[in-house]
Image (cartoon, rainbow, N blue to C red; front, side):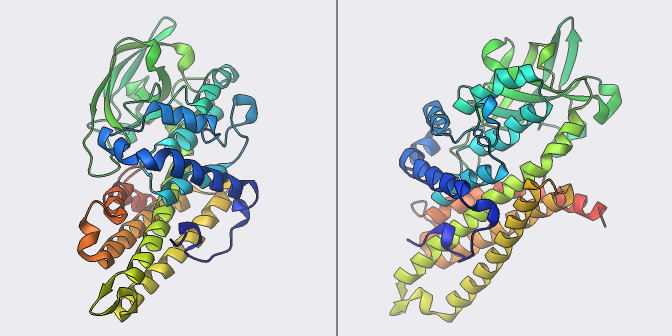
Length: 389
């Protein structure tokens, strides 16, 4: 099979050289040997099992960008990108370690106290703790200012009440960053992030493992907080009311990560489709020999190349501290839109077989759709970009 990593024929960017490239190779082997053979089982069960998380931790695939002193590997987002790309190239997109690694853990690193970092990051690195971030509520999707979950101070504890939905890793997560209102009258300035370790509290309930169109192997859940009490020391940051700022500061990396998954799937879809049209025959010749097939694939490869170059530039800028929120929004919206287009066109080139679940392109078609929704809808991305004009 044509390698998804090599399908575009581009040289590796500087950020993907040396140990990042070795990490990609190692992650690819791990996903191919440990996750892919059981992936149909995980899809059927609608979650990857806890044992696989622990194996990923033992293999060094959790918290790769966290400092070594806290149990991580001391890398950068480049290392996280290598892992997420491996997941996408192997086709096990429902394994939710990308969110755990490059969304949940950085909140602790950037805003946690020294005590919090030492307490939580090593366990996130081993997989003993599985992370989630509870932002979305039934009545507040992309509108983070509309959060209703309330955390009231009661002595040396917070009492948390509210509900969340569409929470990635929601069935397995035992370490949840909860977006709450500590002072509802202050709007965004009354938002705080509070950690809930679910194994240690009462009043926490998991709702349904939500029945999604795609990404079946990733548990996505409703969560309920009914007088959940946690120590006030579980507040992220030195004071209340910093949550909205913290979220805004970390959203660019979350949106770039969605772009990572997008470009990885684009490359896999192209690789699989090129192999398919070379082997599949119609009217006495290979499908690749039809001019329409060549033109379609020429368009897709060109757009994928543009997407990869743009993505690589965004990663370089991010590693150097220069990825602004507007460019991150561009990467999220444009790459996920392109992902949908490429996967759809590749399915078409598979013909009727593309609609069969036994072919990987069918799963990609389902899995790709949510990319334009979570992390802030693409319409919200355009709104943010438009405000910069």
